[in-house]
Amino acid sequence: MLLVYPAIFSPFDDSEGYTVTFPDLPGCVTEGDSLAEAIFMAEDAASGWILDELESGNTTPKASDVASLQTDKGEFISLIALDMDAYSEKYGKNAVRKNLTIPAWLNTFAEKKQINFSQVLTDALTNMYHNYQ
View 1 (cartoon, rainbow, N blue to C red):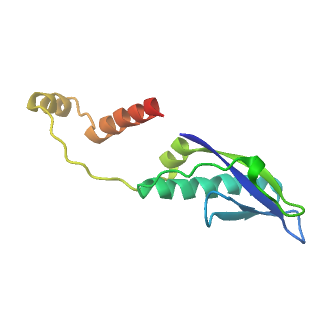
View 2: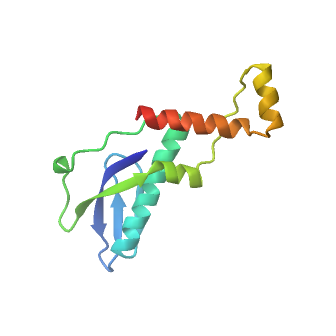
View 3: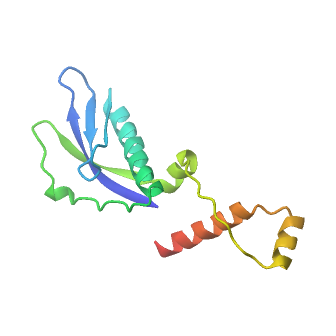
């Protein structure tokens, strides 16, 4: 899942760094000592915020229209792209145990082939998820 959110970059008073906030992600704040670091940290912070929401069963918030956002003097808005599939694959930690029922003959086949049931189900559901997006 690819998402894009606007971020407001507020320059530090005494250095080249920035504080970054997200109008659509309450409490999601980060900073960097340079613009490049602030952008990197913004992507990480927003991805973590979204992953926490998804793992809690919540939906992702709708991104604001950049034209509707206001900034103070010296601030600017930049769009931050989030690759949630890659981020959740690397950092996602919540797993849910599911009990399932399959035909006995299919179970015998899968066990003989040493098929990982969890991986097969995860792959199938991930594929279905991408097809419905």
